[in-house]
Image 1: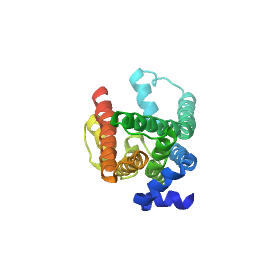
Image 2 (image 1 turned 30 degrees about the vertical axis):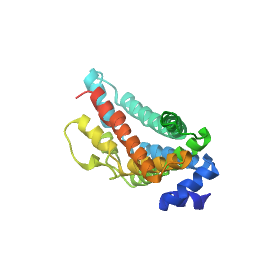
Image 3 (image 1 turned 135 degrees about the vertical axis):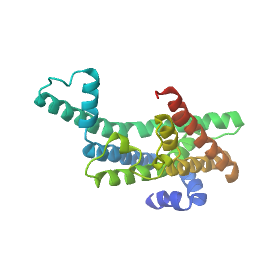
Length: 230
C-alpha cells in the first residue's frame, strides 16, 4: 500500500488507475485525517490567543477593569479550545470531505451518462486527496518551527498559494488563498481518478479536475469573500 500511495503522487498516470482498481480507500483517508489533525495541533501549540482575545475584549468594553488572572485564564481557555478543535476537526472533517467529493463525482457521472460504483468514486476521491494530506503535514512542520504564529500569518505559513501576495482587502486574500498548488494538484488527481472509474480519457479527466478546482475557488474563494464583511 505504501508503494501505491507513493506511486499516486509520483506517477499518477499509472498510480491512480491502479488505486481505483484496488478500491482500498482506508489508508489514504487515515493519512489525510492524521495529517490534518497534526496541522491543527501544530498550529494550536504555536498560536498565541492573547492578541485576538485582547482585541475582542477591548471592542466589547470588557477589558477595562478585568483582573489579570481572569484575562490569563480566558487566554488559556481559548488556546486549549483551539488545540482540541484542531485535533478533533482534523480527525473527523477530512473523511466527510472525501465523502462529499465522492457524492459529487457520482452525481457528475450520472449527469454525463457514465457508470461507476460509489466505492470506486470514493476511492478516487480518497487517493486524489493525497496532495492535501502532504500539504497538511508540511504545514504542521512549518508551524512547529515557529516561535509563535498569529491568525494573520496562518494562510502564509506554507507558501503554496497566492496568499503571499499582500492585499488590503480580506475578500481578495480569501480568493488568493484558495488558489493553492496542492489544491490544484489534488483536483487534477481526482479528475484522473474519475476518468479511470467511468472509462473516460485522461485528458477529459484533467478537464474535470480543472472544473472541480474552479468550482472550489468559486465556492470557498469568491463565494465566501462575497458573503463576508469588508
